[in-house]
Length: 395
Image 1 (tube, rainbow, N blue to C red):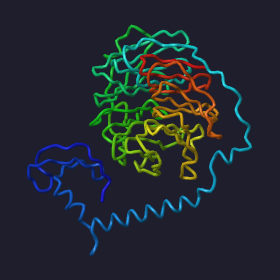
Image 2: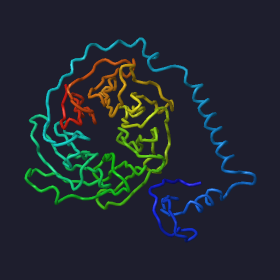
Image 3: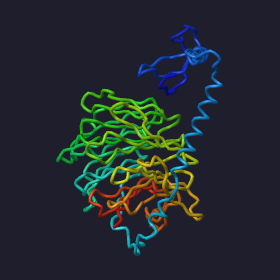
């Protein structure tokens, strides 16, 4: 019928029949329209062939989905851990807390490393965004936003700006300067505007474009300078909770995960959903590309992390243990791609062997849910953010 996303239910005159009634806001070819429920059904039925009904089309759609799964199943002849049987086991890991960053007054919700491998930015439920020097633990910049729950933050590739957003439905960019006493709030530039909270943000391979995900069920690409919407991505049927850009310099794809239990891969140029994976049994809280860009991992409230091969178009590994019963909130890979770090709601970080599928270590230290883990750009350290108001740097 159309590429559509339901954003809100409002009351007013229908764009089709003109009657005042509860309206659904949908997109048709990127144009927003407001239709009442009757006109929605009429529009859905337009173009049906003789003898076709919505029920028969749904049946045909389910049949095609089943055939597709059967064809995928035929290719599912071997698991990753079977291929890796002859690979040597990893030795004992010794990873300990090297730095403890204190300064937030409430749950730390997000963090991101600067490309200089030294600085990082964090955002919190206290409404603050802090730029840290990870070596000295000094706070280089601090910004207080007008809303609490700053759920997303990201460093620009140049290291000269940070972006952040949350419950205010906006994503703003703050230019950074050498003057640590400068009032960054005065230089704030609102770039992205969603109709629900901003759950994630990342710069593309330049400071000029920003990619966001939102509780309104969409992702969007924005021009930082003008604040113009360059491309919108509609396909999730519930909140989008996470996104990650493909690591290739020329890559034009990104992956998103959400409350609809789906992980979708998108083409940034066309706005099309080019691959979709639905094997989780609960919300997908985080998605992260493998360093080569040929695969990605996801973390879910179903207590599992999963590994998807984009070339094989299927899930190739599940990282779980009977003793792990709490949801996984965040994941990231080591620089080599051999280790997968996963933060959980039971305050721990589990370290998984990506090839063998086994757990090789557990990191203890946080006193509340681990909301974010990120490996430093040079691969020598891991930073974790937690609802215990702190960040930890591990090595």
